[in-house]
Length: 491
Ligand code: NAD
Image 1 (tube, helix red, strand yellow):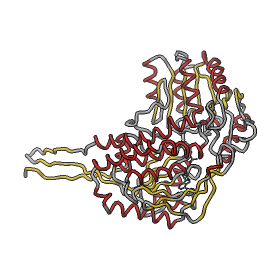
Image 2 (cartoon, rainbow, N blue to C red):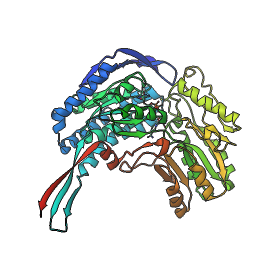
Image 3 (cartoon, rainbow, N blue to C red):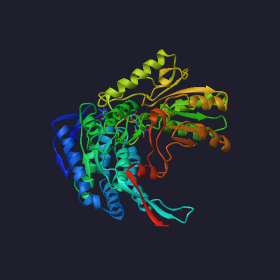
Image 4 (spheres, helix red, strand yellow):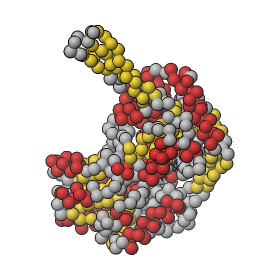
């Protein structure tokens, strides 16, 4: 994998620039170095923020919605023209199977730009004619303005998808952005910078600074007084650190954080579909999707059958080179993250789990032995008091627990500090609606998982975040509304 090692620079004011130091990005597939990355110091982060401000004060600040819509559509076209380069970048950084990068990550990146172009084109400001009893009338209308320079901080699990999910609406609303990709996945943001330049996005509107969190580009960005808002996706703990960092300047934040998501399987469910769906929701992207299921509550009469059929599914997954045709499952993102996941595997056993399948590090033979591989793992015998059922693991793991009644299932699923997503499997229509609505989460699926309409709200409650993205929710976050009140008539 190391053959095409590249040098990844920061992108500021439309130019690629070196940093104050470099670090190596290592492939999670085999441990080889895939890129040398230029880390931005505080001076370069400052230059990026200033570049954004100057773009806003220049011609970018005077663009019309129609001009930005045309530009975002050109960006979407250019993403598609550079599709293979983006897939290569994403696969090199994450080790995810090529098919997944093609079907999910890069396809969604183009869709994000196109969808937010459509959405902003169809959204108009509010207006009210206000009438007073004495014959007086006023016109109240809202002028949406950009927030300004937005700091965009994203994680490594779906790097391009999550980055474009924020950048597309931010630009649609007329903001400038300074993006800080994860240190684990710097590559696709660099290709996206090339895409922006090719599509004609003016210099300074889209900037990329590489580096880490504390004491590095992430912290320099969140504490910079010239940054007008922060949009962040990542761990709940990091969210709380960023919240403290922006508090001094009282800046708006949008937070998409961790999850400990539940699935509830009723005995009346179509078990073929439920098991297929559970397998996807537990193991997709090696369990490294914030929406992945880590807790499965199954009605007792079908508990043994669901456990046994999910075991077969887990055993049928194929780990290997992302470029091999039969590969279904990639590695974890890094050896560091694998050490964390392994600590949960060990803890599960200490807490009394029965390991249904997996539970360790696989031996994939020479060539892959330096990678961050982990076995897809299922447990029974745990309950909600165990730490592995309460804390986010972010790996291909789930604990299965039987239940006896609908109220018990709801209460077990809601027994968490997180509140991101839930799935209900049932063929009883009323129960599907009823239980889905009782889930204390931002997103509740019935008989599916990760089926998305980009106009719907996306986000979580509790430790899972603040605010919603998607559709008008994103447009609202990235705009500052000014109310104009004009006296029309009357005393
Ligand atoms: P992370 O919080 O460690 O890092 C995310 C980003 O924040 C990285 O770019 C990192 O460099 C930066 N960062 C870290 N510390 C910082 C600091 N002090 N100041 C500023 N920036 C800082 O998260 P991760 O490990 O990259 O990603 C996995 C996590 O992301 C999981 O918890 C997962 O659930 C969550 N996630 C949530 C969603 C969602 O939509 N809710 C989506 C994907 C991932």
